[in-house]
Image (cartoon, rainbow, N blue to C red; front, side, top):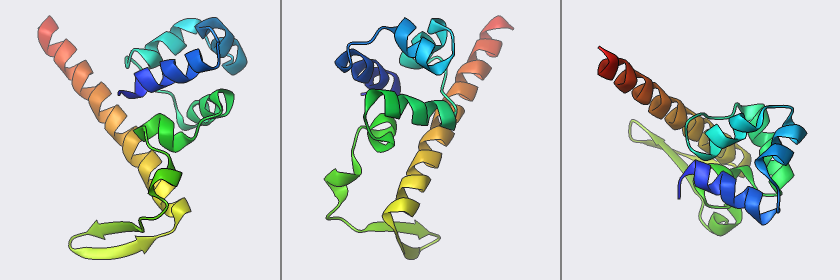
Length: 119
Protein backbone atom coordinates (compact mmCIF):
# COMPACT_ATOMS: atom_id res chain seq x y z
CA UNK A 1 0.00 0.00 0.00
CA UNK A 2 1.38 3.41 -0.92
CA UNK A 3 1.85 6.34 1.42
CA UNK A 4 -1.07 8.15 -0.24
CA UNK A 5 -3.38 5.15 0.14
CA UNK A 6 -2.52 4.92 3.85
CA UNK A 7 -3.37 8.61 4.25
CA UNK A 8 -6.69 8.15 2.50
CA UNK A 9 -7.52 5.03 4.50
CA UNK A 10 -6.70 6.76 7.78
CA UNK A 11 -8.88 9.75 6.83
CA UNK A 12 -11.77 7.53 5.82
CA UNK A 13 -11.53 5.52 9.04
CA UNK A 14 -11.93 8.81 10.95
CA UNK A 15 -14.98 9.61 8.75
CA UNK A 16 -13.43 12.88 7.67
CA UNK A 17 -13.54 14.68 4.33
CA UNK A 18 -10.52 16.17 2.63
CA UNK A 19 -12.03 19.60 3.39
CA UNK A 20 -12.23 18.81 7.10
CA UNK A 21 -8.62 17.66 7.24
CA UNK A 22 -7.48 20.64 5.19
CA UNK A 23 -9.31 22.98 7.59
CA UNK A 24 -7.65 21.37 10.60
CA UNK A 25 -4.24 21.80 8.96
CA UNK A 26 -4.85 25.24 7.52
CA UNK A 27 -4.24 24.15 3.93
CA UNK A 28 -6.37 23.87 0.80
CA UNK A 29 -8.24 20.61 0.24
CA UNK A 30 -6.37 20.11 -3.02
CA UNK A 31 -3.20 19.73 -0.94
CA UNK A 32 -4.76 16.77 0.87
CA UNK A 33 -5.81 15.32 -2.47
CA UNK A 34 -2.25 15.63 -3.78
CA UNK A 35 -0.91 13.83 -0.70
CA UNK A 36 -3.44 11.02 -1.08
CA UNK A 37 -2.65 10.64 -4.79
CA UNK A 38 1.13 10.62 -4.22
CA UNK A 39 1.53 13.84 -6.21
CA UNK A 40 2.98 15.76 -3.29
CA UNK A 41 4.51 14.94 0.08
CA UNK A 42 3.81 16.69 3.37
CA UNK A 43 6.67 18.21 5.30
CA UNK A 44 7.57 16.70 8.67
CA UNK A 45 5.33 19.05 10.67
CA UNK A 46 2.25 18.35 8.53
CA UNK A 47 3.05 14.65 8.66
CA UNK A 48 3.06 14.73 12.46
CA UNK A 49 -0.21 16.66 12.49
CA UNK A 50 -1.81 14.14 10.12
CA UNK A 51 -0.74 11.27 12.36
CA UNK A 52 -2.24 13.09 15.33
CA UNK A 53 -5.53 13.89 13.56
CA UNK A 54 -5.88 10.31 12.31
CA UNK A 55 -4.65 8.85 15.61
CA UNK A 56 -2.11 6.61 13.89
CA UNK A 57 1.62 6.28 14.31
CA UNK A 58 4.12 7.99 12.06
CA UNK A 59 5.59 4.55 11.49
CA UNK A 60 2.34 3.28 10.09
CA UNK A 61 1.81 6.34 7.89
CA UNK A 62 5.33 6.13 6.48
CA UNK A 63 5.86 2.38 6.22
CA UNK A 64 2.55 0.64 6.85
CA UNK A 65 4.04 -1.07 9.91
CA UNK A 66 3.77 -0.05 13.56
CA UNK A 67 6.77 -0.20 15.88
CA UNK A 68 4.83 -2.55 18.14
CA UNK A 69 4.80 -5.14 15.37
CA UNK A 70 8.61 -5.20 15.48
CA UNK A 71 9.13 -4.71 19.20
CA UNK A 72 10.58 -8.21 19.66
CA UNK A 73 13.20 -7.60 16.97
CA UNK A 74 16.23 -5.49 17.89
CA UNK A 75 16.88 -2.51 15.66
CA UNK A 76 20.16 -2.72 13.83
CA UNK A 77 21.91 -0.29 11.53
CA UNK A 78 24.68 -1.51 9.23
CA UNK A 79 26.94 0.89 7.34
CA UNK A 80 29.94 -0.35 5.40
CA UNK A 81 29.73 -3.67 7.23
CA UNK A 82 29.69 -2.18 10.72
CA UNK A 83 26.56 -3.05 12.69
CA UNK A 84 25.24 -0.84 15.44
CA UNK A 85 22.25 -1.33 17.74
CA UNK A 86 19.67 1.45 17.74
CA UNK A 87 17.20 2.62 20.33
CA UNK A 88 13.53 2.68 19.33
CA UNK A 89 13.72 6.47 19.11
CA UNK A 90 16.80 6.40 16.87
CA UNK A 91 15.31 3.73 14.62
CA UNK A 92 12.05 5.66 14.33
CA UNK A 93 13.87 8.86 13.44
CA UNK A 94 15.98 7.13 10.79
CA UNK A 95 12.91 5.43 9.33
CA UNK A 96 11.07 8.76 9.06
CA UNK A 97 14.03 10.42 7.39
CA UNK A 98 14.53 7.51 4.99
CA UNK A 99 10.89 7.54 3.92
CA UNK A 100 10.94 11.30 3.41
CA UNK A 101 14.14 10.93 1.34
CA UNK A 102 12.55 8.22 -0.79
CA UNK A 103 9.41 10.31 -1.34
CA UNK A 104 11.54 13.29 -2.36
CA UNK A 105 13.60 11.15 -4.76
CA UNK A 106 10.40 9.80 -6.33
CA UNK A 107 9.07 13.34 -6.72
CA UNK A 108 12.31 14.52 -8.36
CA UNK A 109 12.27 11.57 -10.75
CA UNK A 110 8.68 12.37 -11.78
CA UNK A 111 9.61 16.02 -12.31
CA UNK A 112 12.62 15.07 -14.48
CA UNK A 113 10.45 12.68 -16.50
CA UNK A 114 7.87 15.44 -17.03
CA UNK A 115 10.56 17.84 -18.24
CA UNK A 116 11.93 15.20 -20.63
CA UNK A 117 8.46 14.62 -22.09
CA UNK A 118 8.06 18.35 -22.76
CA UNK A 119 11.32 18.60 -24.65
